[in-house]
Structures are given as structure tokens and as C-alpha cells.
Image 1 (cartoon, one colour):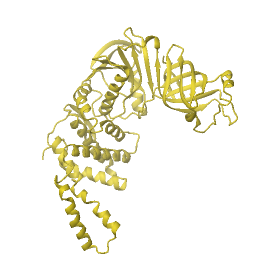
Image 2 (cartoon, one colour):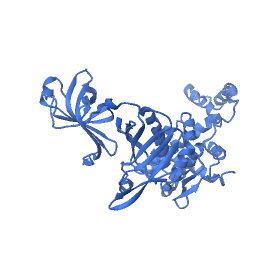
Image 3 (tube, helix red, strand yellow):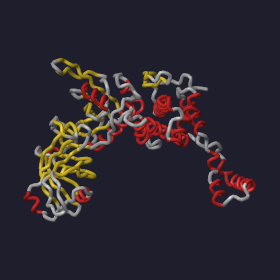
Image 4 (cartoon, one colour):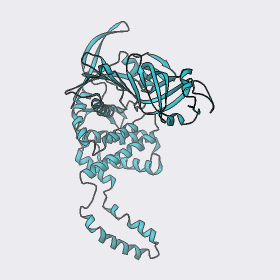
Length: 471
């Protein structure tokens, strides 16, 4: 189904032709010929071509080029492909272009191109419970841990290695695409987005495609954390027992440009599976209480190499604030005195009297503003929380690094710049190094990871330990 052609939006990896209809908000429908294409970035293009006979059936249907009425007028597009799949778009459609300019008095244009968010295709003749599932995954860099088969590539025999991951729901097998080496080299160099592998999901019990998609979304979050770049799937296929495709989901997934700041070594065949095995159960346990999916997205934001260093570091310190705040509240470390609430009213009275005595001309609104901050007296300082978290989680972070993290945080938050601009890279990686270990310790990981040597700013594969972390 892949045409392997290029258009102005990139390489086309999947194409469907067929007949369809635009369903309008007002209930009317407009017939058209449809071409559905998915680009390697995940972008979904739907080109609708209208015949004159169709135009004449709805002469009152008009577009005004350059306005938002496309999105407002078209509810969805549906139809059937030439190979027998019923299709229907999901979520918002955005008009991209038309075949020619026209004005308010024009009839329906000959051609309209839409960007779709998601499309479901289903073969009604084969819609039974699926036996296995295949996903196209973008921007995942890896080396396999088990050989598959020998293939011919560039007139040479090449042994291909699959990456097999053990998960709580079953086995996920990631198979590199035939030209994986060339694609990953290009993705690295251009900071781009492309399919690098196919994921075969083999659940240990019968699950529908929607349930499997939820599991793969979980796995993609963990793989993204492991690689420090957004890993996502852009299409999924459900197969029957006899190997026929019965259902397809094509998704314009949110994926950012590739960044190579991995947490788990992509060049070691064993590390990724060990990481997934160890952290997946804890991830599920802590996902809601720590809002981990959002936290991972913030982490990936902080590692985007195409973004200004100040912006990345600001995102990193925001994530650090968030994680430390969640940990402190979960473990009762955020308050200095547990009985503060019982004494707060009395303290409020004492402080109010002292303020009046020291500032007899104070205005009511100024006094109220001061008194409103009394509860803040019971909050631990950020530095104190960092020290406690370092000790409790046994982070391998020197004690004298913590005030430097605070200085970076305060300078960026209050001045939007680094305290020492000639040492900005080190300040950035100091924060990232702390967050890396914080994530790993929270998730219960104790294997190898990619650490940053703050003296040399080099990346080193190390075993996570607590050496030197105790005062």
C-alpha cells in the first residue's frame, strides 16, 4: 500500500484511493473521488476531487478561500477504498489547499486537500477478533537483541536483528525497516521524523485493537523516556488468524524532531529490554499520582535539540519543580510542621499585631496581602526538598551540585537567562542529570544508563548506583 513516492510534504509511505463523501455540518453530503496519503512524519493528506455532476447536485454549497469555513462546514469524510475498506475520518479536518482560487460566487471547487488527524479503515467481510497487530513506529533508534533472518541489501547478505521487549501485557517485537541504517542516519543528521521500525504486538490474552493501542501508547511513553526523544506510532493494522488485514488506524501522531540525548543506551542490545521490564509495572502504579505521561512529555521538551538552550533549561527546571513537589506531597515532606494548621489562626493574630505595631500606617489591602502568605511559612525550601529527595532516593549527585541547580533555576525563572552564560551547557546538563536520575529512581530502575560527566560534558554508560550519595 506504500507508493514510496515524494510530494511537497515528504515521502509518502501509505496510499489509498477510493470513492467518498464529505459530510457537512448541516447534514448534506457531497460525493467525490478520494486519495488518502500518509507522509513519513505521520501527516495525513486527503485529496477530494469533485465531478461536475456532483457540483450540480448542491449548487448552493460554497467555500470562501482563505477563511476557516472548511473546518466549520465539513464534519467528516467517509467512503470505501478501491481495495474494499470502509473509511471514515476522526476529529478535526483542516483544509490545506484548493486546485484554484475562487470567490464567494464560485461553485464547489474541483479539488480540495485536507489534513486529517485520524482515519479508521475497516474491512467488514473480515472484521473478526484480531490475532496479531502491527504498528509503524517513528524515531525509535535501537539495536536488536535477537537475530531474525538474513536479507539481501545492496547485493550483500545482512543479518537483521529484532528487539524483543517483555511487557506486563505480552511481547512487543520491533523489526527495523529494510533501510534502517540509512533512515536513522538521515533522521539524526536532519533532526527529522521518519518510520524506523515496525512493532508486532503479541498480547498474552485476547485484546481488541483499541485495547492494544492503549498498551502501545504506554510503551511509546517509556521508549520516549529511554531515548530522550518522542517515539510514537503513526499507523496500526489488525490481522485475522489467516493473516488478512481487517482493520487499520492511520494517525497524525504528535511527534517532535529527533533528538539524540538518550537516557538508555540505544547501541546496547540488552539495556532497553531491561529498562522496560523493570520500570513498566512501577510506571503503571505511579502514572496517575505523578501524572507521568505529562511529566515525560515535559522531559522530552527539555531535550529538544532544535530549541534554544535557555528554553530547554527553563522547561527542565519546571519539570524538576513538578516532580519534587509531587514526591514531597506523596511522602509528607512538603510541610515543616505537621501541627501548623492547628496553630495557624493564633499565629495569624500574633503576626497581624506585629505588623500593625511596626507599620501603623499600613493599608488594609497591603496587610491582607502579607497575612495571606502565612501558610508559606510552613513550606520547606526548594533546596531543603532537594536534599531530602537526594537522600531518600539515594541519588548519585554530589551535595555541592544542589545549590548550583537552585542558582540556575532562580536565574532562568526570574531573569530568563543563565547566571553564567559562558557555562550554560554545564548548567543545562547539571539539571538534566538530576532529572535523569530522579526518573530512574522513582521508577525503580537499577541498570545501566547514559550519564553526563559534568567535568568533560561527555556521555558515559554507567551502572546506576548510590555511591557517594549519602551525606
